[in-house]
Length: 278
Image (tube, rainbow, N blue to C red; front, side):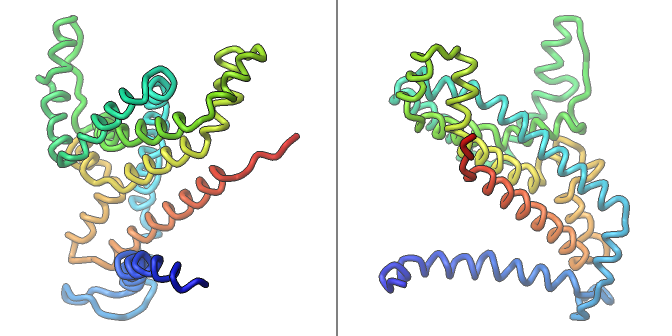
């Protein structure tokens, strides 16, 4: 290996070892510890894994978190695509840059602050119920529900998904789109046979980022969803508060990491897989 190239790669390698691989190994090791008299003891036993894996509430939280993250990913991807399509094909490059800049601005504000702002909008006496009441509808309970959780997840993920989809669609060679139209393809067929396959990688990566953020988010299900039933991040907090059971919380964290690794690896393989010619 070229020493010059290795010197450039060394900082990121050291960074990953110190701040990702090292803590991950420690978390896996901690899941085998035991808590005695509110203190962790290096025992390297499977009691924590047996305890957590045989509890129905753990698996209920797991499937709930997986379902909510999947639903958020589908909703964000579908909601973002029309906006991304318009920005990529119907606007000038200058306007597109400004819109992307405006989409980045929400990330300058604390996600917790943005989440709390939904209290005013979703409350029984909030903005939405006020409008519905003017129409003779409602009021509807939207806070402390799964709907509130999804709204919080979309607040976190939707701007990022729009940005990633826009970048992916904007990089499509327009000559291929024009060629399909010149050959008689309708707009729907051009979208299905040309645009979607060419942007597949970017769309799937955007969906992957959305899933990762939603799967690991604690703020939305806690403050907008009421934390009941708990998602896995909330379960981790509850477990650490129960007798300082950090090893059992580590078991849940490892479950989350394994799930994310499996989904991320599968998505990346599918995203970059070359299409086989028929």
